[in-house]
Length: 238
Image (cartoon, rainbow, N blue to C red; front, side, top):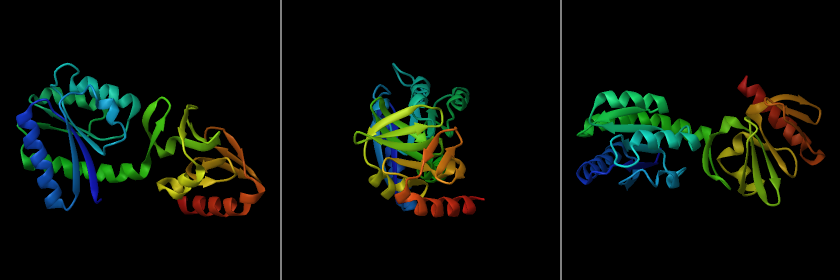
């Protein structure tokens, strides 16, 4: 991993500057470009959705506490790793309620933080291959790739159909989707639809049925290529 985007939320200038220095040192020692952003409060945390690979969050923030901010964050982003910073270990135990990756005690020492960052980097690398950032009309969402049944084009917008039956709308094209990181698993089967091959439950002739029960039709133009790719993908997955 060449670049890691880290968001630090810490109200104390002294602790924040020390942590930012630790992050710079970590990047130098691990040969990783660390792009760190520092916020003093959690009020603007939602505006940072999808912009960072890791969040380092002080629990004892004034106003909106770090725990409250994490609970809110998990409503639109269930996967970005969180490392809590706290002065009292017992408060960190609540971090598991929001799926926190780890916690570190104040004052944050370099080696303590580096150990946690090593673990976080593994999660970040795995997450990049498994998640998609969608800037929908309802705001930015970070969703697991495995939760997307298919993508449909309507009026120059992409509609992401999730396994939960939720639909997220954003600007884009199927061509850009195919050429991006999702191209390995998302397969275009018609002029207006691309299916998540990992979600295919049944392929019969031109009919595709997903694990959620949604049905798509492969158009004649895409049929040969689609059948070959689906067969190869499902065979390789097995």
